Each structure stands twice: as C-alpha cells, then as structure tokens.
Image (cartoon, rainbow, N blue to C red; front, side):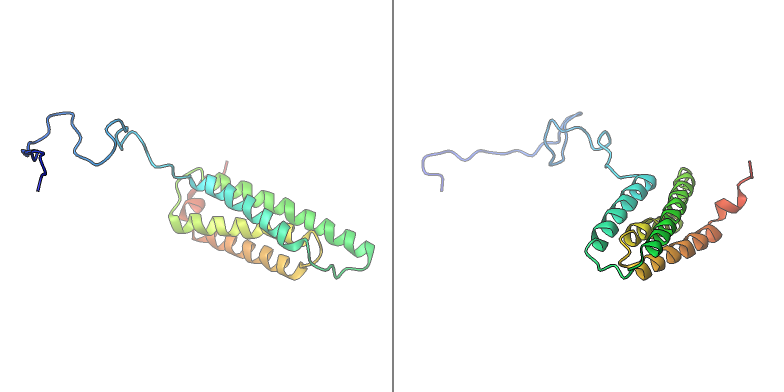
Length: 160
C-alpha cells in the first residue's frame, strides 16, 4: 500500500567501471591501500616483555619479604641485577634473531622464553617471591635453549 505515493520502480543494472559493488562507504580507500595494522614479531616481543616486567613488578610489591638480614638482602639484590643483565642479553639476542623471518612456533618459543626471563628480576626485586622468580628465570632459559636448538636457521648462520 503506497497511500498516495507512487512506488519507485527499480531496474537492476550492472555497475560501470570504477563503481564499487561492496557495502563500504563510497569515499573509503580501497582495501588494498589500507593494510591491516599487524605488529611484527619484534614489536610484539617488546610489548610482551614490557608488559611482563610491569606485571611482575606490580604483583610482587605487596608481598612479605622473608629476608631479615640486610647483608643477605644486598646479596640477593645483586643476584637480581645479574639476572636483569642476563635478561637484557636474552632480549637483545632474540630481537636480533627475529630480524630475519622465523617459523611461527620458533618465534613464539623465543618470545615466551624472553618474557619469562625478563619477568623474573621484576618479581624477585622485592625479595618476596624468590622461588617464583627463580622458577621463571630457569624455565625461560630452558625454553630459550630449546628454541635455539630447534631453530635450524641459527645453526646454519656463519660466525662473523
């Protein structure tokens, strides 16, 4: 029922050249010109490491320190600094490795190892969760060694 209006007659026609048949906005750029913003493995690595350090630092702040002796606390903090230097070295090594293409499983293993290693000094600094931090560090080192062993590209690189 049109109630006084005439029904519009629509005739199906094929669009001419340059006319889009998609449901996108007519002024939108073509999809080929707008690539998806996917982070590279190196960018995801840095985001994950910074997030893990922040989470580890925040999660361990409220814990009760089981260390009563000041000398022992200084010794443990010196060991945490050494672990942080090793974590920085692991981050540099994995970042260097991910400059070249890597299989997804290997890149994931490298990223997981680096996140575990980097989170451990942040967890251990407050001297409240030493066992958890040590477990994170050693698990990360194990995964890093396993990933390096399984990565065929590392063994074929010439030594410079």
